[in-house]
Image 1 (tube, rainbow, N blue to C red):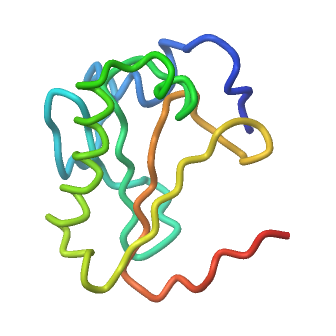
Image 2: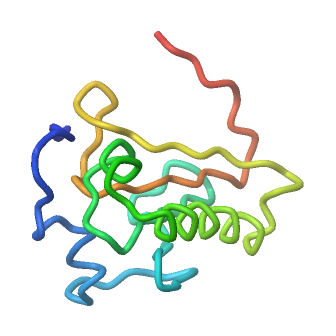
Length: 125
């Protein structure tokens, strides 16, 4: 069910629980700013989620309240995951959903990395 990204952060969301170690994840990268792991419901042959370690609901929330170090660290983590997975040459897609119209399902900022096959053009309807 899509969430309203203007609501306060929910400390019991699935990604907060993963960050606290209450739920398992298949981690591919972790540093002080970010955690990256395989999506449990992949939408491409390779589907990795990258989340900041701070309590941010959406990209909008993060860009407004995140420190310069958190923002730089998170963006660098996304790039490092793509490079470490060998995705730069064949290509990959990044997606960050924000709010109801985008169908954001978890109230914690996350970036999807899709790869592993030709993904085709993004089409708006």
